[in-house]
Length: 248
Ligand code: URA
Image (tube, rainbow, N blue to C red; front, side, top):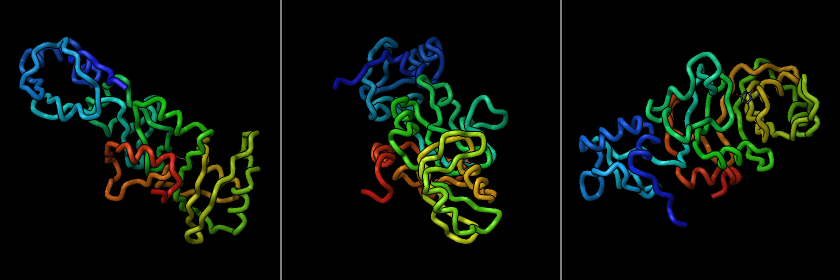
């Protein structure tokens, strides 16, 4: 398939470097360079491929990665996933320029303000829908720390596929509980209902004290990615979302 092309000034404006006028001024000032030196024509069309940062520099630095861009972010506690909620948002953890991109970067699903862990951020609408659509059964694994010891019946209650959360009518899809200690467990779910994990434990007379997501599909939160940090997802990491955990 032939790569799509964009005018240089439109490309840089879409990547958040400034308005068309501002990036025109950057081009005129000689700040934009390619393989053969300075690019002078704002109307020059460039192929939009993943290796663009190797071919184009702005102010001496590789240009930001073009769409489709997906980030793996370690969401810290205390930040919200939506622009609309009050408080500091996960988008504030990204470089300011990345918040001005078109297409915009959005979180794939949400984590509560008091949940930490693996959060995907993408400008790829098709990927977003594939991950959140229940049809694809992408699993999410949470580490829950509980206020009270597990009683022993919770695993069966979650696996049955007939648990109805308070205020809802449709039963939850089966979920897998893996106790780690009397008061901690992994819970793997395929849906993303509002406060789902906390409400599931409330339904079995417990209370979640701390919640952390460490895996989505076959993708683990990378070791060494500290809370608040993110990395650009590789094609293989994106594919692993649709593989079983541990599958090569
Ligand atoms: N379930 C919850 O209760 N909270 C989250 O953030 C994610 C799943």
